Image (cartoon, rainbow, N blue to C red; front, side, top):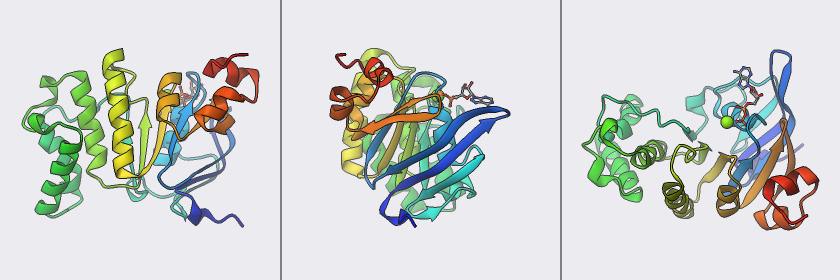
Length: 243
Ligand code: ADP
Ligand code: MG
C-alpha cells in the first residue's frame, strides 16, 4: 500500500480518453509538499488535460488522484483545496479588481474582516493595491494576470495549478512575472503544478520538471539532471541539451 499522506498530490495510474482517443496513459506522479513541479511538453501532449483532471474539471477514465492523502478523484472541484490560474484571465468584467478578488470568498460565506484581510494580503503580495478600484477593461494584460493570480491566492489553498499563465504576455512581462511567481512560491511555500511549453520558464521555475509526450511522462527530474542527463532524444531535443 502506498502512503499518500507523504505527498501533496499523487496521481495513480491516471487515464483519460476523449472517445476512442487516449490522451493520458496510466500516468503516475508524486508531488511533494511545497514542491514546484512544471509540466513541460509540446502542444497537444495532454498537459491541460492532466491539470483539469487534478482540478476536477474533467472526469477521469481510470485511476486515482490524491491530495494531501485524500482520494479526491470524484470530489467536486471546490472541495479539493486547489486554486487554478488559466491562460486567459477570466475576470468578471463588470466588477472592480477588489470585487473580483473577494467575490468567491463572499459566496463561500467568509466573514467580512477575513475577506478584507486576505484581499489586502494578496494585493500587497502582487503589488496590485493601486488597482483595487479599477475594472478589468482598464488594466494591462500583465495587471489582469496578476489579478487572476490574486484570485487564486485569496482562497488560501495548499495547491496551485497554473495553466500557461504567461503565454499571452510579451517577453518582458513574462520574464518579470516569472520572477514574481518564483518569489511568491518561496514566500507561500505551497505546492505548485505549473504547465508550460516554454523551456526557459520550466528551467527557471521548477524544482522538478515532468517532460510529457503523447500523454506519457518521459522524464521527471530536476532541471539540472534533465538538461545534463536526458533519458532519450525527445527530451534532449525538447529541452535543448547538447546532444
Ligand atoms: P496541451 O495542454 O498539452 O496542449 P491538451 O491537454 O489540451 O494538450 O490536449 C491533449 C489532446 O487531447 C489533444 O490532442 C487535444 O486535441 C485533445 N483534447 C483536448 N480536449 C479535448 C476535448 N474536450 N475533446 C476531445 N479532444 C480533446
Ligand atoms: Mg494546454
